[in-house]
Amino acid sequence: MDNHTIIIAEAGVNHNGDMNYAKKLIDVAADAGVDYVKFQSFTADKLVSKDAKKAIYQKSNTNDGDDSQYNMLKNLELSHLDHLELIKYCKEKNIKFFSTAFDVEGVTYLNNLGLEMFKIPSGEITNYPYLKAIALLGKPVIMSTGMCHEYEIKQALDVLIQFGISIEMISILHCNTEYPTPMKDVNLKAMLSIKDNLDIKIGYSDHTLGIEIPTAAVALGAKIIEKHFTLDRTLPGPDHAASLEPDELKEMVKAVRNIELAISGCGVKKPSESEIKNITIARKSIHLDKSLSKGHIICEEDLITLRPGDGISPMEWNKIIGKKLKEEKNRFDKLFYSDFI
Image (cartoon, rainbow, N blue to C red; front, side, top):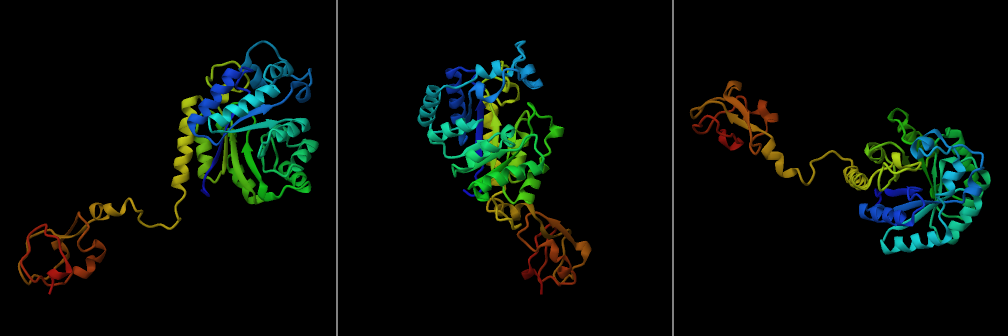
C-alpha cells in the first residue's frame, strides 16, 4: 500500500536490562500490529564518558540518586547473546527486529546481524564518522532530527549522499528531544518544512504523552512513526515516563491505520460508495403545501420541500412556478414533471 505508514515501536532501553522484560515488550509490539520493534545497541564505554551527567529528565525518571549517565547506561546494555535471542524471538512473533547503534563499531555490528535499514538517532546527526559508516553500507536510512536546525539536517544529508546514499533512500523524522515533549514545543509544521525544503520523505519520532500528535503527523503526510512504549509507565528508567503503555500502543496503531484509510481517497469531491444510498433519504424534493384542483397554475405559496428527495429537486423550484396541473392533487403530494400539462 502506497499510503502504509511504517510504525516503529521503540522499546529502546525500557527493558531495564531484563531479557524477560525485553521479550514482553516484543509481545506487546507484535500484539499491537506494528511493523518494527526497536531496541538500542551500545556499550556504555563507547557511548559516554564516566564524567557525563544525566539529563534533567533522566534524573527525574530514574530517581535513584545517581547522577552518572555512564552508570545508568551500563545497566541497560544488551549483550551479543541478548541480541541473538531477541532477533530469534521477533521471528517467532512475526515482527521485525530493529535497533539503533551509537558508534561506528555498533553500526558494523548491526550490519553483521543483517539489519535491512539503519536509524540515525538525533544525538548522532553531527557525528561525521558515524554518518559516513552508515552511508557506506548502502542501505536505507531513517534519521531523527531532535535538537536540530535545518542546516544541520542538510549537512548530515550531504555526508550521507557523498558516501553513496541516494536521497530516495533517506527518510527524515521530525523530532523533539525532551521526554516528555511539551505540546507547545512539538512544532509539527516543521515536518512539512523539511519535506518542502529538502524534497525528502518525512516521518515523526514522538516523545509527547498520548497518541494525538503521531496520529496528526500521519494526517499531515508522515510515512514513518516512531513511538516509545513500555510495559508500565511507572517503572524506573529514563524513558518509561514518556512512553505508551500496551493498550495505548494498540490504540495508536488503530488510529494511524484509520487515518491511512481516511486520506487514501482519490481527492475528488463526490458521493462515496457508502453514502450514495442516503442521498434520497437525506435530501428533499418539491411537494404541495395545500390541496389543488385540476388546471391550477402553480405559484410559490403552493409549494413546500420535504423528504425524501426522489422527486423534483428544490434546485428546480423556479421551473415549477407557472406550470399547470393535469389532475387534482392533495396536500403533501410529491410532484413530478409528469403531473403538469
